Amino acid sequence: MKSLITRELFDKVILPIYAPAQFIPVKGKGSRVWDQNGEEYIDFAGGIAVNALGHCHPKLVQALQEQSEKLWHVSNVFTNEPALQLAQKLIDNTFADRIFFANSGAEANEAAFKLARHYTIEKYSPYKTKIIAFYQAFHGRTFFTVSVGGQAKYSDGFGPKPADIIHVPFNDLDAVKAVMDDHTCAVVLEPVQGEGGLASATPEFLQGVRALCDEHNALLIFDEVQCGMGRTGSLYTYQQYNVIPDILTSAKALGGGFPISAMLTTEKIASVMHPGVHGTTYGGNPLACAVGCAAFDIINTAEVLEGVQKRRAIFIEQLENINDKFKVFREYRGKGLLLGAELQPQFHNKARDFLNIATDFKVMILNAGPNVLRFTPSLIIEENEIKEGMSRFAKAVEKVVNS
Figure 1 (cartoon, helix red, strand yellow):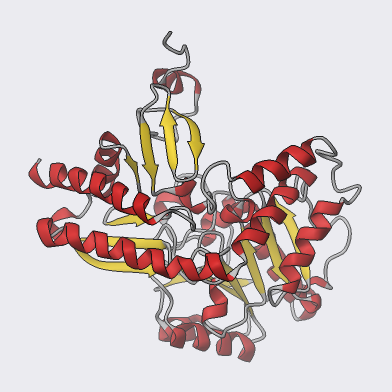
Figure 2 (cartoon, one colour; figure 1 turned 135 degrees about the vertical axis):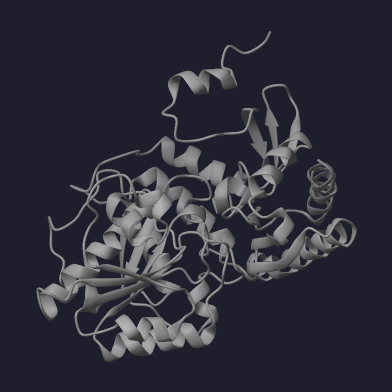
């Protein structure tokens, strides 16, 4: 019997801010998803870099089931064991001394930007509030984070924006120098721009920005919401650059599919905060943190982290096979399994077409802007699944090219 829950219902009951595919996924296991009709898809999208261990990983399911029978929510009037356990894991494996938990990347970034301004105001001057950010960046959908993000299409149309935010070109150290001064509170960047086309920061750029921040007593904030938690082959991407931020934000893969985010910082910077300055009702809830602990313990292993680069090589080999035949890709971007394939000029503005047609051939991919295809699969996707999914994707490419 056909389900009463149809794709058409979406258009009637959901705020019209998304344009989802025409099928409705109802079940996932590993890197495969099934829709209402039992059709199977191979998932190269990973819930936008969220499902780092695929769908319904047994260790995550077990953690959720066990915690669901103990304690779900107590608010931040009280603490809980899973939150403290996950915080300690993050501290033990990063530069951080203090952790703030929230529910989404936007919330983690909102907290980071508020902390940065509060710190520089308290320590230096009430006028030290300027935030330097970058064109094509994406930091979330709250009004503050969308204003710091460097894409007008997301921030225009909502009235006056928060002030004292300046955008400059990514990877352009001279542009940062030109606007950097002693009123600068923070420089905010993604080591790999997630929504902005998957451009990676150069080592020279990150090292130069770190030096400028030190010179002007400004904080360096790394948004690793998308590129963190093993996605690029190290626990966090900053660890590949030998550049340590003052604040780092993490979300998406942190919960392996369960909503959770974190802001990481040092004791020195955290010292300006006190009870009541910031908060969140659900942040650090036992369910999310229990799943986060399970995901962390699996991702933060040599087997998983080293496997990321091996899988990237297989993806690129398969993309090259497609490109040899259809000549659609100009270059490959990103790091690890935050992988972008930039389209040739004749296919510009068609990234969404590739995404939509790919679903007709039972493979799920993403785009990163109008000209880049994005692949963010499970970090533990099997080699045969990569090859099978790419075989399906090749048929989608052929259809786009010949249309």
